[in-house]
Image: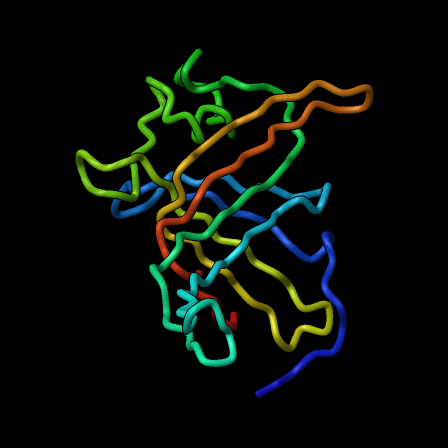
Length: 169
């Protein structure tokens, strides 16, 4: 198996957001030109102490936690397809499951709306590229900000899994 020692950076990644449409999902590809994709995996541990003493106690696994995920990207417009069916789907519309866009959740009927996020990291040496997959990402907050040079959308949510799928591509 090939191993690459070249450090990856924001030039090597792209984020693809897919919905649950079958057989071919709606998708948007984002270049994270600000390098702002973050995720956190947390492990809960139950500490059992003996009369307050750690030295005589022990630990046990706690409940599983979903993954916290966030990203920030630049935007040119918020709506497209929801305003005119001939226009391209925009990120805001997809993340909001906007009317008129036909975006379908990756979760079942009656559950929180989710999307699949696939983060591809290309190895500059061409030996060990990877894809990190978050299957059931739901939105907790969406913040739009204007700026001097560009406007940004900041997404914060959770992936209803305890760890992402990581694979070589």
